[in-house]
Image (cartoon, rainbow, N blue to C red):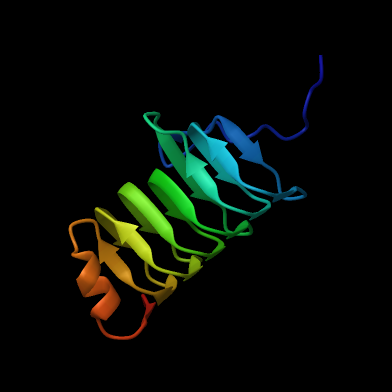
Length: 141
């Protein structure tokens, strides 16, 4: 019935996209999702994948999130201000700008990505994280 002039991305890097938050959209409040969430707009609030469901968060180059993120797979190419908790994998693409700690099992960081915070492996002792050295500023170049 309604035909869009722009098709939503059906996949990104082999990940299916079930939900698209477009570049003109701002969401204020917490968001829970399952499947593939592709963010080109702005979210101010916590973003969480539903428990027991597959969840892939893809933050586009011009997208931004201001809040904590919890998902099995997190792929960032935009701006994220908050901690990231990636249960399986976190990918920081070349335009990623993250201010916060990244908790991960597997991390991939492309040249140009910027992280102001700590990289914390899932098996790290919580006391080591709290008592460890100051913030880590990483610029993958």
